[in-house]
Length: 132
Image 1: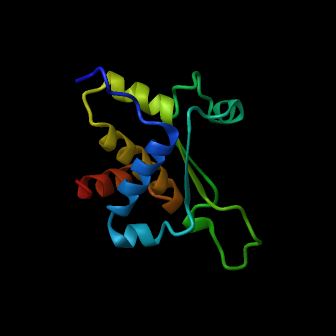
Image 2: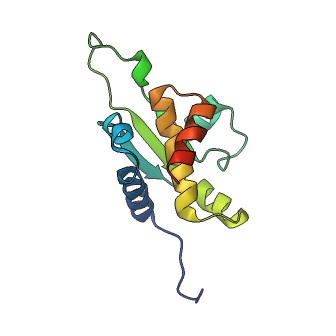
């Protein structure tokens, strides 16, 4: 069975994330319009330094942009909000825990979308619990 198993590629992990997003509640998805999901193997050195990470495996995901509570119609044009998922740290976490890869990706995605909404960790936990 395991002789043909392999870790998902960057593109496959991005597809998994988009599939998970599509299954979240519509009101939640509607507020994510314009948010771009990107997958990279690791965060950049600049991001690691900015976040105070000790290792490139410390970050599973990251929200970059202006969260909804901080946006205004009078804002000047800005770059799109991005959600980064970091493939290698996610796979490392998956290998070390008894959890399905899809659940891990969903957790990271909901957490980073929560930053887009300006939500607390408790709010994000409630949203994730309702998505089960």
